Amino acid sequence: MSTRIAALAFAGLCGCAQPPVREAAPAAAPAPPLAPVNIAHRGASAYAPEHTLPAYRLALEMGADYVEQDLQLTRDGRLVCLHDTTLERTTDVEEVFPDRAVTIETADGPRRVWPVAAFTLDEVKRLDAGSWFDAEFAGVRVPTLQEAIDLVQGEAGLYMETKDPETYDALGLAMEAELVRVLAANGLDAAATRTATPVFVQSFSAASLRRMRDLAGDTYPLVQLVGGPGTQGLLTDDGLAEVAGYADGVGPAFPMLLADPSRALAVRAAGLELHPYTVRAGQVPEPFDDATDLMVHLFDELGATGVFTDNPDLFPPAR
Ligand code: G3P
Ligand code: CA
Image 1: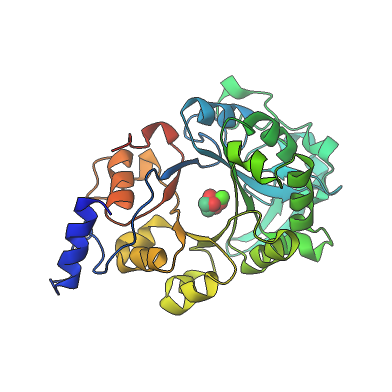
Image 2: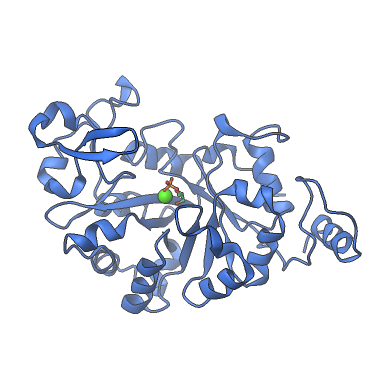
């Protein structure tokens, strides 16, 4: 335990007044890890189009410990790295396949979308996933998980998210089984391989994480994301006890921890890793000076053991 955390923990235990946002929660924290991990969110996505090989490559160059992949499944069952379940935000699918949209109802009215699951991998590979971000990246493609592994393996860790698995369950596509298959095909089911390339699997879906545990046992540490619909209650003491039964860590939206710092130390007291998301240089709340200052607070005052950031270059130096 750092001197600073120890002093703040003692202040909490002695019954001092409720601390302001920049102070530690009023409880004793377990010792933080020697080196919290730098998780490049969608790659170095502040500087290159998210979930592309240039963004992943840049994350490695910036010293990320882990490179994040959000996973979707194509119609022919291939895992690709893409945040959304649909293709139109980050590719030119609207120009390449104008007749393949489906119309969905949203709170703002009907909207035309191009679901990943309606396209084969060959079709997805025809799309430009870089121009929307900057002309410099024109022609960059949506990577498969295999391509991401080929780039990252041996250089950093992989931090994969089973994204919207229920969407794929409904279509008869088993995301977790394919993920376990791909990891094993790359030797990542062997502990020796994971020494060079550690692996985390994360999800907002508890059912998905439980399925991963059923399929792969304790091979891959699992992280329950918190902040999406239906997950807010997981930071309560009861919620954390439940999460500890099937996962190894929690990834809350960082504003939840600023709003109630006691939840940060409750996560650590439950023996869980704490990997809040997502620190972005352009969205740093008061009273923090910048993204680095915010990350220092998450580590030193709240006991976070890693952080998701679009700006892996702004990760604080070892202290
Ligand atoms: O996985 C952590 C964070 O990435 C969750 O939010 O929507 O960016 O996947 P999202
Ligand atoms: Ca994610």
